[in-house]
Image (cartoon, rainbow, N blue to C red; front, side, top):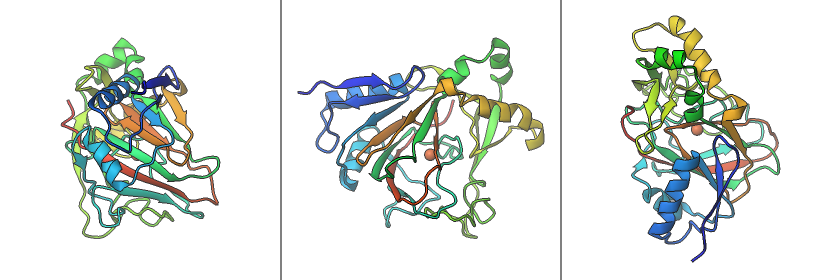
Length: 280
Ligand SMILES: [Fe+2]
């Protein structure tokens, strides 16, 4: 059996994992090692993988139920798959703001497996940021201030006919139709990771709009500050994709951003999300 090797990319978050072929029947021991690497590093990366849709789904199911996204229908009729495509000329891409995925849900996904099918020769990297470190580096006073707060998360900025991106030139369409309905839930600003027990910040630009029982205007100074603080450079790592790369992030404690810095090339990714639980 090949030994699995884990090499950190930064002190804060992210590691590359070597010595595992994810396309076949992955042993229980290898799955345990991958899960431990995810818990240790927040996001893990694999190179030179060969994953068709079935293998991708099989892998996801080793870590939980597959999450069905309510606002995307880009999986060629398969609701378990979200194809994320950027074409030359797109003025917007999916995930270009710092965010955690799909946090308007009562039970946001625990993670995602994003697989690179076609990538540009340079550019289109993804940045990740440790929300565990972002929380731990706050002062005791700030930790005490935000401890009792909840924040309202909504998908109205990223879906629906009034979304600012509804009319943008973006190849990957969310639901922007008139029949779409907003999903809105409040979560603690500081959540406790259900597996590691560590506290992390849980607010993000794509979904968080206001503290519960406060107006957006009242919330903005502190909420905006917390969201910006959450991606200070020392909390981050940056991943350069190759065809066949796979990223697996822990959506409970890591934020990410897709860099929109390259034109003239296709970028084709396949994402499968893993179901999560209520945020506490
Ligand atoms: Fe995302």
